[in-house]
Image 1 (cartoon, one colour):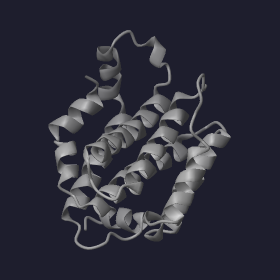
Image 2 (spheres, helix red, strand yellow):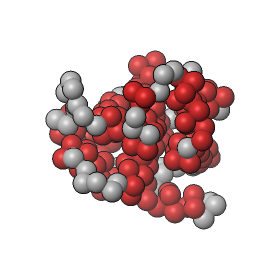
Image 3 (spheres, one colour):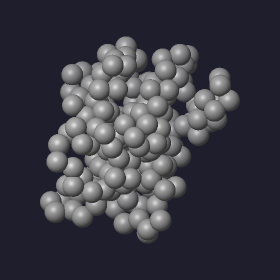
Image 4 (cartoon, one colour):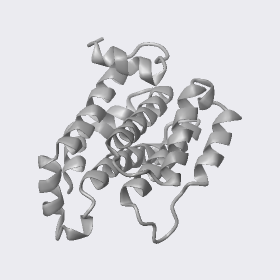
Length: 196
């Protein structure tokens, strides 16, 4: 079991997501994917590929039009456009592929009309792929690791991995205490930074 799985299991993330209302689940999942995208955007020393830029723009469009982006027809237009960036076989960038899959799973959750076992699985996978994109960007020699234990050692010693897990857990706690419709993502981050 990789460290992210252990940390999220120990924190009962899947169970806790199941206790949120569907609107909060959508917001939480999309917020975590957005955070990973922001981390990648800030960390890049190389020019991002067009797929990353494209999916980043879809994430920005989602928040620009929030909360309308949670409703048809805008939601469906964003989903259709985001699907064009899904990676094919033999893609060269593990971190970029993971980010695109994170967004795809997040959009799948956004399209849900009710929380179900499938929605829970999509939410979990969106969170995992968001985390994995950060891991892969910072530790991109995945093939060099001979076992899950080796990967777990890297995860545990990685400030970037720890920060991403900490964000996901902190953001979930914020969503659990949120009353009413959450504000735009950037506003909520400011509230979190100010301890509110």
